Length: 351
Image (cartoon, rainbow, N blue to C red):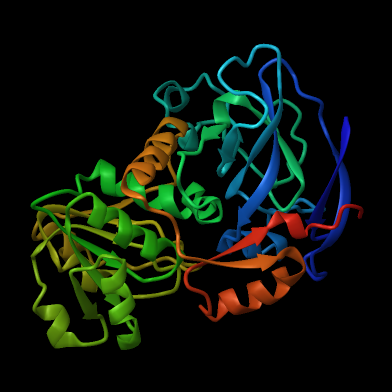
């Protein structure tokens, strides 16, 4: 075992604070990474405050990790000390179920091991995430970072990027397709960038007229204010795909009505309460209402390579780690464009 420093929540009520803990020494197929940057996801806040009622304390959040390899196990031949590497939302899975065999580890039937808040395969132990100096990860779950991209801007790709890339790819966003992105936050701004790079006509739906210029800067061809009934009606039955990134209560049927026959709305935002679906919204045009969860490891690498080819990173605001509680407060107010990223050089050397 070796000593690491990090930031942890000890209870749902206490702020994150410096924390010292141990990680395992590298096994034959392990990769040790010194963490340079870690993105701040809304799920980090849910977890540290136990809003999903499943948090294991102490909790070291963080699953948008970019860093540099420091050590590798004896059986790792394709990574070496000094290489850039990344880790997303998963650090293990059963490797044996149908989903894992198909490269869909995020749908592992026994359940994947999350980068933080476990449970670890075999032991059930807690896992500690990227708000820390180092992480030890099995090679299969370590990703390569394309050259030439801003490393801090790469970090949110490991969650926000793959969460939007996966449904866009699966449901065929591309030239000749009209794609809607609902919401312009951490997920939505990546959805706009990626759908644009795929060659689709991109329409951004927002409740905020003030976001129109920024949406077009990011790649939207058109912006629709969703509170305007006439503007929504003008889009009826015209979309091949809509990706909904909104995590608050909203009328999903208003967007289902915008789909062509046989086309799909994919929900990636996770509202606290169920979204009522009016059955005639789907019956009359044989529409599909689907969901999508991050992406498998191979697809996440594909997404990173795609972003490398197209020069895509997240729009970020860098913070030192001692500002994480302020960042959480601002995140609740949507006061960030569009993702906070922690400069891990700001982590105290001793905790």
